[in-house]
Length: 290
Image (cartoon, rainbow, N blue to C red; front, side, top):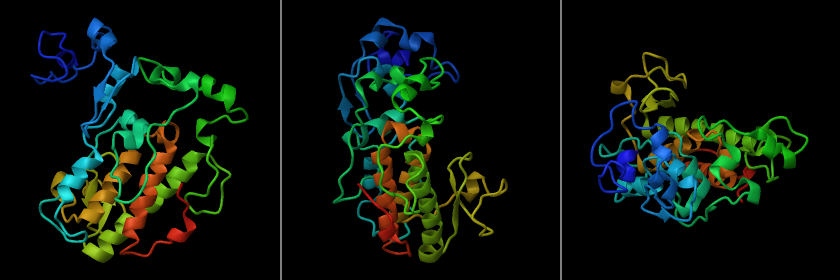
């Protein structure tokens, strides 16, 4: 981080030397004149967001390492349902709250052609910065500020400002978090169905094991410890599957997406399901998109 800021005398906004493990982030990473002055951050898509103020030092790390553009580049010129040895899973990396918050403005998710996507989610004036909602050093959520407006709930996940039935379960009683999780679960199931029925090689997701998607050798829909090994990583990717899996992981790796930018998360999940529905049976009529 100090290298990136140029505090060590190297050029600013670039990294010249790899950091030693467990020494990259410390007090000086943020509490330097250069850190305080930082006001703009370049995202993996190449888009630079400026006027960030104190958010900037957070955004340097919390933006992911890839964007939907990387997926588009990887699948270019490959037929949508053709297995290609040139494809492998693109993992956006964890802690990508900034990319989710700015949505289509920084193109963090894979955005399907012909669809509109939500840009930066502007919250109320008292909750516009990272530190308005999070403790600076451990990122713990300061829920008191949220609950002063969203009264009558004891769990932030119960808050809902969008009242459509996005996941098609017939209920809008829960918070928007429930809608996102409902669509997310449907996308995981659709990914498995597509891999089995279209590609012919079962796939399953293991959230704690890189690279997360593995060949489901016993077809039980889960990845056992013996299956969650790198040689068993899923390798028979098509463009359609890679796009959907990327968006699945994009939403999975920001557990606060329901607050950071629920509209963008819902749109990515919905459109990934819509794409898969071209080849496998999914009741898209039950799902709402806004």
